[in-house]
Length: 556
Picture (tube, rainbow, N blue to C red):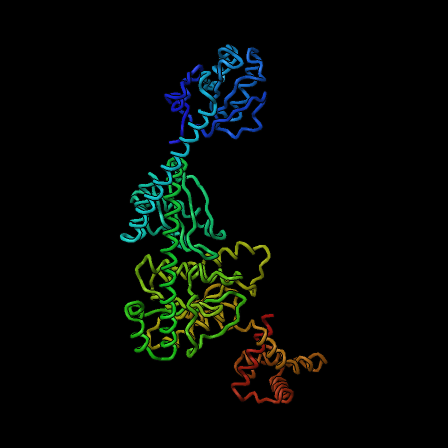
């Protein structure tokens, strides 16, 4: 504990006597300061014991003393020491009354006690208190280190909670609670997820102080990790502000947990290289070799149907992972610290990787996540937590984007922040086909301005939205331009006639009736179409191309 006015009064060598404010002697003293200025307040910081002889004060003027004492109290001065036998034989009554009225402790300093002795006593007490705090901090550091080595993060949190006389919780990169101590703090920690997510979005290292749920405690949040984005967050809840020893313990815990997460990062980098090798073998049609390399780490994932997910930032170009490419660099890993890059695309892929990995870890299931440049490839168990987390992440981005751009968004065509394609369930033998399905779904998601498209959805809708593509429209315009130029001269409506004839499956009477012309007239017009285009309408491929071209131009 720091020195207090009471401890100075009880100091046998100082011989101090209390003349006012005896009920307020338990306040801590930050320093003892001597000043004979009529107004020393500009030089005060608060928490001082002010020592005076009243050399420049009219200490017998009641009104002057009330103003003087009130100024000291407002400045945070915790006590006033008055030396008797120098300028006054005893403390003037005006000063005693003013101190009593304002509640400022007033100490009488005898003539034989120099101010220097009081200053030395305060300094020695402060030094002793600091030494106790440092010693306690080192002891806490040793205990936290021992717990981290023997019991892991859970043991470290338990030791930290005991050191600060409160509770501690650890959050993963997605904001989910992964460990807490004591056990009762789990529910309290879970209610701080929104605060953790806000802190996670700030550049690391970052910290914040928030009120605990119900305002029952004071909670400090600190990010962990050395990367641009945090890998985890530590929360510590206490009833009051942390003291020096508790602060040492907290900083030690932050350092130890950061070392733990960085060690996990190195291990994950090795897992990342292994996962990339497994994926390449699967895409190369070598499921047996892939299963052997996967071992226990990913082997369980290959024993049941899985889905392949391919994700890219909206502005990224599509490029398939080469099956004969070298393994990704060791630094590449799909967590926040390594996937966070210079642009928003890296961030959104990093967020997806964090979400998928955290969901899989909580569910105890295997998941394979492989970054490939500006693309992220995921193998997740069909119906598992990781696949569900991927879908939920995409839905959240879709909803946020819709809310953000609802006032200016066109019906289609505006790029999303992220595009994701998901294959149908497949096994190791069909991994390459599943990867192609995911790429196809990704391409459709990009064309439709969607965040996520599953391969099963491709056959459920109409093919017509796929025609809303610049290349398709350019082909349609080039194919139909000769007919449009012919109709522009007023020599017959060949485009309308062609559309009616194709829509009636080549039935002359039905198409002619729809157009309101004789069937011989329609036959003549179809011959003109063949002559102008140089193609035969007897060819089913030609009829298909013309019909798709007509549909593509009608969607404009």
